[in-house]
Structures are given as structure tokens and as C-alpha cells.
Image (cartoon, each protein chain N blue to C red):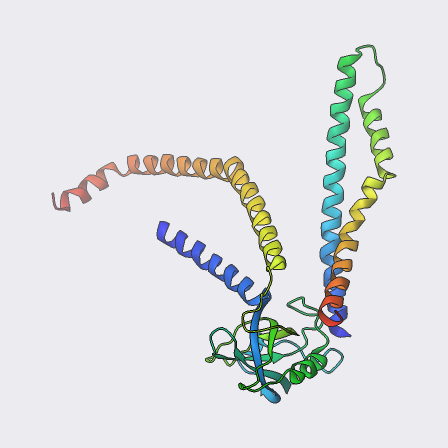
Length: 93
Length: 216
């Protein structure tokens, strides 16, 4: 039991670090894309009004609810599935 | 300096290669001659032994370990495998079926006159000086001594992934060094030279006097 607990705790800590880093990175990428999008729209239509920060804020809020963001949870799911598959193949296949 | 640098680089890559060679699975075609268990008192080689059967006490200083004695099909040399749980620990084979594997291996025992060949998947090294043995992961019946072992797909996948990640980190590190560290070092060097020049100027006469004692 101790060995399993150690694996779970260590694994969770490592994956949490990966998850947090990936979340921040993905959000930064999204922000950059929104910025570029805003600039593009501004070029097309100079009369377009509204604040750029508001635009980005709205885009990011949309991103927060998206499936794309939830895909990052795969950081936890993929290794768990991988371990289950290895256990099956090693011991029961 | 260049020699030290290359020494360090080659040493560290040798360690990486050894690590993968020890940890990744390999397959041998063998004829199993016997199976037995023996008590092992771990000493300085304890790092090369895995863990007690999952669920048992893990802190015992010695325990009985299963072994599988074989003769390699292609070279005819003997090879002895240990058979231990890796459990939830390293390396991540998650092997819990040690006793079952021993039963399967015992079932495939054969004599030289009527050989029964089997393929043993294992990781680890045999080293007589450290008394260490590769750990058997699985055993399966094969047709003959020349049976195909199949492509090591998993090893190729893992090594490719490792190479990709190493390359990615190396590129990032080089960019970081060029952008941040090299300019700073150059600045330090410049400052150092400037300070050196200033000091030399102050001790001009002392230096002249010292130089007068030196062989021309």
C-alpha cells in the first residue's frame, strides 16, 4: 500500500505541475491569437469601435468554458490509462 | 577546457545510454533448464534488485527470490534471470504476477535432447562481479531457436520521444544562452579587462622593477 501511495502522490504532484504550466501556456497562446485577431479586424474596418482589452477579455472567458481547455485534463487521464494498459499487458495478457 | 567539456558530455551520455539499456525491455530466445528460489542478502548491489512481492513487507533486509535458469538459443551460453515484482515502483513495468510467471517458466522446462524454446522478455543486466541478474517480465512459447522476436516498437517509440524532448530542450537552452548568458559574460570580461588595465597603470613602476629581474 505504501508503494502505491507513494506512486500516486508523486505522480499527482508531477502531473499537477505539468497541468498548471500547460494551462498558463495555453491561455497565453489564446491571448496572443485574440490580439492578432483584433488587429486584423481593426485593419479591415477602421470604424470598428470597442476596447481591445474588452475584446480579449471576452475571448478568454469564452475560452474558459470551451472543450479545448478541458482537453488539458488529458494530462491526468492519459498517464492513468497508460498505467492501466501496462498493468493489463504485463500481468493478464 | 575543451577536453573537460567533452569528457563531461561523453560521460553523461554514456550514463543515459546505460540507463536506457538497463531499463528498456529486451527479448531473448532461450531454453529453460531449471527454476529455483534462493535467499538473497542484499549488499552493495541492492539497487539492482526490485521490490518484494506487492503487499508484503518491503523493508526486510533479505528475502527469497525466484530465478529462471536458461540456455540462450543463439549462442548456447547460459543466462540466469531473476523473477521479482516491480510493483508500483521503478522501472514502471507494473509487474505483480511473479509467482504466476515462475509457474509458467517451470512448465516450459526442457532438456537438451528434447528442447522446448521460449522467448523471455526482460530488463536489466547480468553481471557476475556484482551478482546481478536481469528481471524476467514475461515468457512465451516460440517455434524454434530462430523464431522472430518482432520489432521492438515500444523501445523505438520511447527513444524517439526522448530524442525529440532532448532536442527541444537543447534548442531552448541554446537560444536562452545566446540571448541572456553570453552578453552578460562578455560584459563581465570587458569590465574585468578594464579593471586590470587600471590596476596595471597604478603599479607601472613596480612592474618595471619586477621586469628588470626577469630573464630577458
